[in-house]
Length: 404
Ligand code: DHB
Image 1 (tube, rainbow, N blue to C red):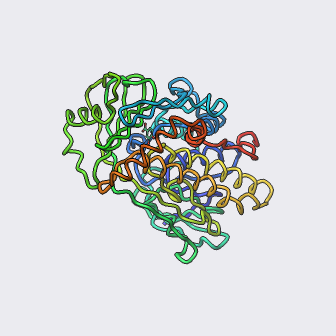
Image 2: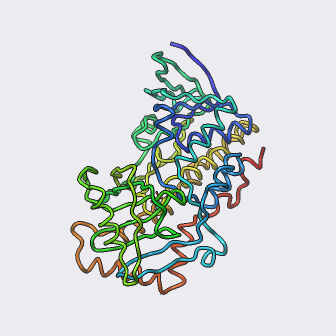
Image 3: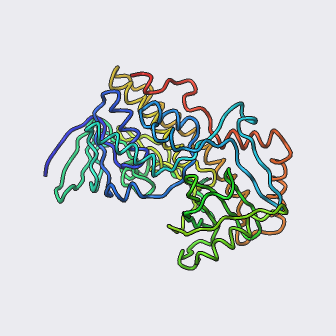
């Protein structure tokens, strides 16, 4: 058994844990990141790839923006398809200049890992955390196994960035936490294809056959999704069936061609909404998917994780420099406001665009009326565009990097 100490012990080396480590490192706050998986697995994990402006700004400010600025695709809008019609939402025009950037989460993770390792900052892959103890004491401890050895990491603070299935949430006693949840009666089949995207912008398609999303990763790689029943085996979807179904669901009365190409990955994603409150108990804090899950429609997951750790970095830096816990005390409430907005939006996008297995024709008419309203009313379109592009991250607060 070997024992070490650090100021902030971070459990989970996904985007939340890695970005928090970067922000703390830049401000001279010691931290150690423990990641259960190996580097290759973490760098390959496919997730969404739509970055809000606030996310782009934080990544740039902390030195992780060089490749994103070179390779990211700036998008000024999305297309909604329903009732065989197409409607474009122009984000800058609706929101006073806000845009999004298409840059895959896997690429963000690769950039952050490279920065962390180049800086010589501690990042341990293959570190399996068993328990977080002493959340309500001054000295919480992480127990973990690394390279076959049992280890302990004593911390001033422990941050759980270990996702929905992580252990950190369980360090908060049941009587002190409450989880709010919703599940959805469908999943997504997601594929990557070596073919240029068929449209310049993302296409969200409502159809009675089910939802389809045409997205992209790069100018030569498409990312495509189909609503499928829960429990679907990806092997039951041969490539041709996927292309035929994407084409049928995204069809409009205006002729349009779906470019087909070789599929390089195929997987099924569950859809759920979940929020655990509060996001702090004593000296244990939760961030990203460890505290909340959104269904993927609208791509809020990564943006929420970045928002959480940006708020948290500021709070931990303040505590480290001044001893004040004012921002730490406000952490959970500050984040939960944004979290619930994103939960509402993600749920709205999901339930407006998908067709539930037992959906009545009446409910389909309501969905179409809502989509028609977005197409017809500047108010309704602005509401969607503001939520999609995200509220400014630094409203009323300075960037943790600027505080350096
Ligand atoms: C992607 C995923 C989403 O959930 C979304 O709304 C937009 C894009 C993606 O993976 O590209």
